[in-house]
Amino acid sequence: MSAPVYDSNNIFARILREEIPCKKVYEDEFALAFHDIAPKAPVHILVIPKGPYVSIIDFSANANAQEIKGFYAAVAAVAAQENLDQAGFRLIANTGANGGQEVPHFHVHMLGGKRIGPMVAD
Image (cartoon, rainbow, N blue to C red; front, side):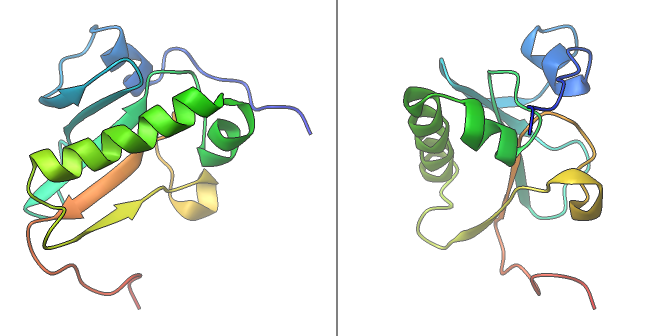
């Protein structure tokens, strides 16, 4: 199976190129983290890798070990920076149409700042 074609004009690619502003909370060589524009919790941060990956499937199959480790280290750094690491948070990676993925650039949602409800809506 071939890798999906990456759309370099998706909103996250444009944010990475600084064509669109974001409310940045963290950045390093592997990832960028910023506040979601439509938060679903008191803390709702998106973490995106800097590489052109469509989904977590694409990322895990095609990113190198340093990119993968760096991305998840960035997630942990954001959790600590935002004081989510002690009380807990939910990390979500929507994938594909049935998973509710709206932007075709791999990203995770960090939700915290309160007790998060059920895993999925009834």
